[in-house]
Length: 538
Image 1 (tube, rainbow, N blue to C red):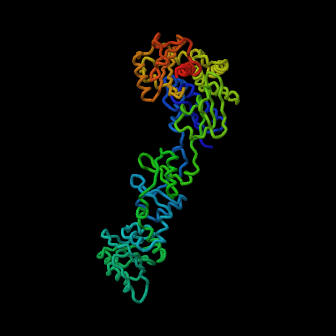
Image 2 (cartoon, rainbow, N blue to C red):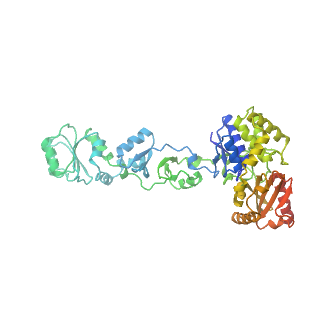
Image 3 (tube, rainbow, N blue to C red):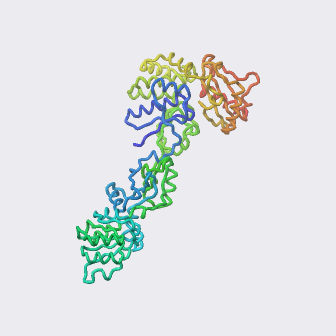
């Protein structure tokens, strides 16, 4: 089964992150491979909770489409560019792989070789053989022929042609051997004759010894001598496998980067007939092979959405993913799928409360640390049970988690709000980026950011700085309205600041910022109020 990615919404809050972590744990307990993800940076409160209960940050998910690093690639077997054709064939046989990338001394991919490329040695005309052998190295010939390099000379003179001198009464009289590779038997006279005629390399078959006179003449004529480990027939066959693989490789390689989307790679793969494609990293080094069939059979990520169901709040390209489930407590807006899925939406104060219910419904008790983390998320989303979205079920589940975690609810709430808020160090822009959600209201783009703080007095930035930041962010993000809400725990209410072209619809002349007592919930109080005001005005 493929990995399932569980993620909350963009600009994640504690409930979104913890719901993903806890649901991934529950899935894993049921032998379903799942991983928790996040769609943005953590806010201070969530970072505090994860640190307190010793959990790592979830994986950052940037796109719902599959990247090449998500796929099981073929193993990255390679061959060095100075390897012989024979060595390459042997490695392909050992690895059971009919293709290989060719790499340089730094292990960077410089070419590609396939069994089809190697087949041309047998099928091509003599011109290819000449081209292959004119630059062949003596040591490579000896190695390929399982031979003995008896004499070598740096002043090699080869034209790539091959002559096989057979025994006859004419000796070597009828052969053109100048600058050629000459395959010859153990007849000393014939050996000396072809040397005198300017042979470029002597390969002796059916002999274990070379006469001293032949060696002396070879030195004078700068002609290397090799005693082959094979007979005439196999020597002539294997000789053409002695050149290096770079003589046959394709230097124009169609390769992909490991970070590329499979969707984009598949489009490129459909334009040609290659069977496999090298996949490289930033250093241009091979990490695996992508097979042609993968371009036909791939699927994008399998996902479960928690704490949201609107595509506008989810990961980019979510519409291309395979959505398996949704667990949420928000309104259902633009959600649709091509096939039936499990959809659990409850009127409750926290998505983590729903996940906690699912634990107990399945007879699974969360571990102590996870129970504490889940308790913190419920406290966060219900504002320590002061939010009007809070239900009796939230309170009941929180009490049960509190007992498992051995943490008092009020003590954890105090630590979260008064120790993790860090209000005095935050700029206006930082508040606008931490917990912001996008909504479409009356065909207008509306952003609502919310910060839960101990007291409005703890904020260091001025009202002017907040309003200027709102205008700047609204312009940059193309928002018709940007609302910043500071929810004051001590005063049990919220302060409102507005930016964007439609801010005049919500601003009042009596109060700046606008304070609403007992207004705490973005979902049940703030969003409906903004929606009604815009509907009346537009």
